[in-house]
Length: 412
Image 1 (cartoon, rainbow, N blue to C red):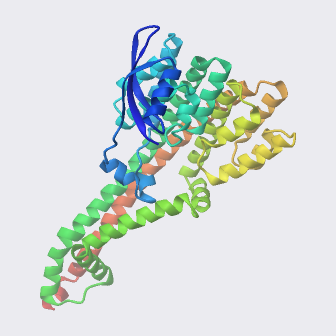
Image 2 (cartoon, rainbow, N blue to C red):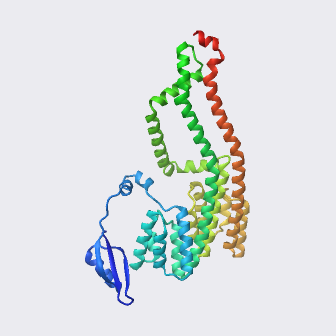
Image 3 (cartoon, rainbow, N blue to C red):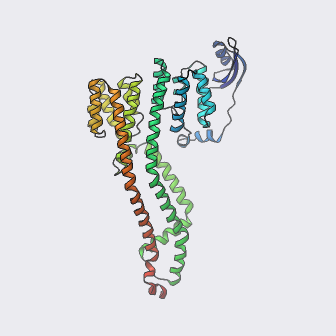
């Protein structure tokens, strides 16, 4: 549908308004403005220029992977500022305009501009945000909807700000825990590649000049060096292709296997499980506090957890609620929820203070996550040092094994 840029005047207040709107024809756009009591002074169709970003997004499969999205950090900052502006009594449209001008994310700026235009045209904030499901999650839009229906949008936004601050804090903890092993792996890979490209060829010249029969580890190292220096472009292409298709498989047919594997990892599995449970529990507490029913809140909270195995347990819990059962029992049967958490949920169901007990459970899990990450980091650091030393030792032995029998090498 064509997009029209307009500039209009409100005759009642003499206020000038600018924005964009979607309409089938120019006449329809003009009628829409007049139906709102506005007098259009400029109205013309926007001509979209093809950009590298738009062309990339149009590529099948790849476009979806490379499409820009609003990050958790930007969404958290927006929610906090939006809640503050609403609490100060600033109207929604003006608040959106202020935040649109303030954000440094170009993609987010365009989204806020479109949302503001839709709200000016008469749409609800929920409907306007719901048009961007990749940027505003279902949880976010559902709570915005609950806030608009209850007339307590500022209070709901404050709850969202607290919730997303917790999400961001958990994300930082996980990234901080993964940073050390990732850096170590990169260093190991870089060192091995440098040795294969620059060091091994020097030794190869010495060995070949004497015609000695080389040990198997040395032969493997030399062949690897020859392959990388000759077909480096093929190695890079194969690695990129493997990562691309592995990512597609991970999100498709391979998701159940990968998600199960993630929960069974020796150190990280326990951390991932507690992060998933904490995120689910805290989200459920937030949506219940916003006036959403428990059954609908279950579906919304489950949407914040991207793990197939956990979703199987959530589905069983939802079926239990629909048949008049409890929430705590099916969650306990999944084996993924700590016993302390399920017992606190059971107490909340008996006392009618579900939201309070869910928040306490989430706080308990956050402490558990901190301890698990600290333990994991303590164990990973020496393990990575051993791995790095082991790799370098294997390479050094492969290079120097022929020199241990120097007389044989030199005599040929």
